Length: 215
Ligand SMILES: NC(=O)c1ccc[n+]([C@@H]2O[C@H](COP(=O)([O-])OP(=O)(O)OC[C@H]3O[C@@H](n4cnc5c(N)ncnc54)[C@H](OP(=O)(O)O)[C@@H]3O)[C@@H](O)[C@H]2O)c1
Image 1 (cartoon, rainbow, N blue to C red):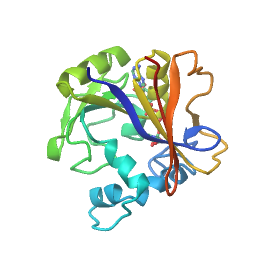
Image 2: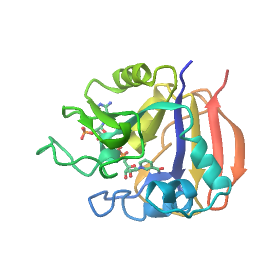
Image 3: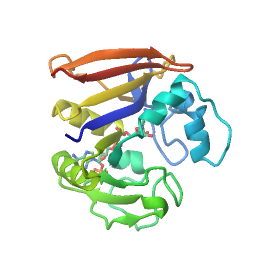
């Protein structure tokens, strides 16, 4: 059975998955990049940005596992970009340039309809206005038996958690305090929803915790 997986989702000690005031200059919000410093050092991230170096330790291995067996992604519209409200035109094509690192269909949840966007390297952004269940159904179909990765951001993951639809949740906990921003778990009782932590691993720049639904 195809799983819905959250992988490599970084949070601060105080539980934020993005900083406040996201905009074009601050895609992750204020101080948000501090969440991703574990990822920026990895060979995986360096290679996707055209560099041949990068660390190959625990953090890198876990980041690589996050891409294994994935046949489609689901993102929220804020993770896709800084445009809010109706799309003024078709010019925004995501943060990732002409060849995004997904290489499979990516379903973007939004209230504002938009035509699909085909990018180089196999990524196609498809905009879904019918809600989380429709996006998951479409992603599962596109994934053809492989897993669906729920990329974020925070509001999107919270909806899928509350609906009990996330099978696996890997959080990369960073030793930083953000103080404000988008809080991942506030008001969500993961225990009552049936989740348990089954593994934790200390990486070079993050502590990795792995949660899953109890069988
Ligand atoms: N910590 C990490 O590892 C990590 C990973 C990924 C992203 N991020 C960060 O997370 C931040 C984005 O998170 P976020 O919580 O602000 O937003 P988000 O989850 O990316 O997107 C929320 C938006 O998506 C649309 N949407 C969500 N659910 C919908 C539904 N059921 N039906 C229709 N539209 C729906 C709505 O946009 P509209 O109403 O405007 O259409 C909503 O405002 C960014 O800063 C990003 O960089 C962090």
